[in-house]
Structure formats: C-alpha cells, structure tokens
Length: 331
Image (cartoon, rainbow, N blue to C red; front, side, top):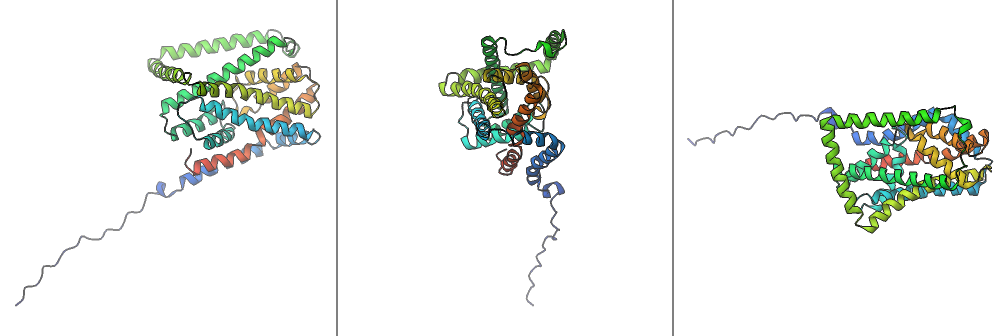
C-alpha cells in the first residue's frame, strides 16, 4: 500500500485589517481648502469695507492705480530678495516668490505676522534647513526690516520735521503715556525672560545660532546686499504705492509727506496685533494722513483704495497659491 503524502497545513487566512480612519482621511486635500474657506469667511465679514474701497477707485486715475498695483507686486520681489539674504543656501527662486505671495494670504488669518512667519519657516525647513536656522533667519529678517524702517522714518522726519502735525489730533499727555506704557511693557517682558532659567537657555542657544549665521552672511556680499537691499526696498515700495493712490485720488498732500505718513503709521500699527493689520493699519494711516494735512474724508478714501489694492485684491489669488503649495508639499 502506497504511503500517502502528509497533508500540508496552511496558516489560517486572517482578514486584512482595514486602515485606521485617520489614515483614510485626505488630510492634505483638506488642508488645501482651509485657506480658501478662511478667506471666504474673511471676505464675507468685511464685504462692506471691500465695497467701499472698490467704489473709491471708480473715480480715480487708472494709470496711478496701475502704478500702485505694480509697486505692490514689486514688494513681493523685494521680500523674496530679503528672505534669500537671511540664509547662505540658495533657495529656489520661483518657489520662494510664490511662498511670499502665499504668505500674504496666511498673514490675514493670524495676527502680528504669525501666518507669514509660519509659512516661511515651513518653506525653509522643506528646503533642508534645520528648524533652529530657519528661526534664526526669520529673526534676522525682522531685525533688518525694523532697522531699515526706523532709519527711513528718522531720515524723513529730519528732512521734513513739520510734515506730521499730530499734536491737535491727540489729547494732552497721550504721547507721553504711550511711550511710558511701551517702555514698561518691554521692561516686564525682558525681566520675565531673564528670570526663567529654561527660557534663558533657549534664548542663549538661539542667539548663538543667529549671531553665527549673521556673521557668515555678512561675509558674503551678495547675501548682505540681498538682505539689506530687499529690506530697504520693501517699505519704500509700499510707501510709493500709497503715494500713487493719493495721486490717483488727487489728495492734496506732498508725496514725501505721504511716504512719511505711511512709515509712521506702519510703525504705530505694529504695536497693535491684528490679522492683516485690519483696523490698526487703517486707523493709523488715516490719522497719519490727516496729520500730514489731508481732510478726513479724502484721507479715508485714499486709505480704503490703498488697502483694496494691497490687501483685498491679492487675497483670493494668494489663498489659491497657498493651497497649491500645500498640495504640492512645498509647505
């Protein structure tokens, strides 16, 4: 009798485990839609302000308005140069410019430039820079921008000391109280940071990295020129855009005084954090233009038209670019 072959036992077939729910959710596709939804809500909440700015442009000189649009676009180019000047590595130029354009839309969702900062840090880390160096580059950019704005403001104040007549617009002793409040707040912040050991160690390590990077960057003339040239060109282009809108609406204020009003208003508005500077920048610009000699109605019309060009007009395209960058994993 022929022996039978042993029966080969096979392992029982187990049903394949389905993927967890969180892995089946198209998270990146959802993130691509977040900027568009946020912008849609933002536009719906401020539709009256957008409409007012658009109506002011109907009677304006179209050529000066096109000049304002051009200076706004060149502003993103200047910011791209300044961002490139903060790192030694060469960043991809097209993606860098697209990131600055998208950062403008992200900046309208979070106050104090947090949105734009997050976008730029994400972009630089995606280009291979460590998080510490990306943060140091961001700090160097803010430092260069603040220094150039202050220098420009002081130069124009020295050249035109009577351009801004703020005295009649403010109650007595208001300026002194604002200065003392700012000094006291800064002192409390510095004291708190120095008294906490862990925060002090983080700040020390960050400053060591930032200073080493800044020293290396300034040994490269091309990087130093990009950093300081871009940081200087950006506020000049923004101020030139306001001058172009003022000329389009025939605002009876001398252009250098309009530039001084912009620089003073942007410095004051930086103290009040708001998404996109909505409210703080608008009010500061109106007050600065009135202080420069413009009637209140004309100053308000100029600011509404200027903010329509620089804020509302690029908002939806910027959100689209932001979503595309997230979808393509650039951010």
